[in-house]
Image (cartoon, rainbow, N blue to C red; front, side):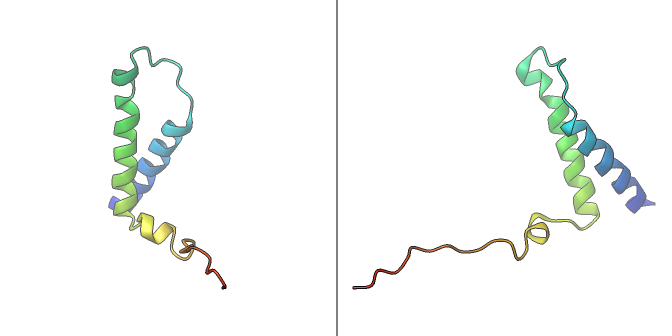
Length: 70
């Protein structure tokens, strides 16, 4: 039951974040709803076991300075 709720919250909050909303008249107060949707998306993803480290595993590469031959 909790997994189904987390999936529903993740989908709805994800859609809410990416649908443009032109009704934000006051910038800071208007951003509070997006902040709440982001927090709900974070809760849902953590409930489902999705973490940033798990999402980007194997994609990060350490790029160092090239060695100078001399």
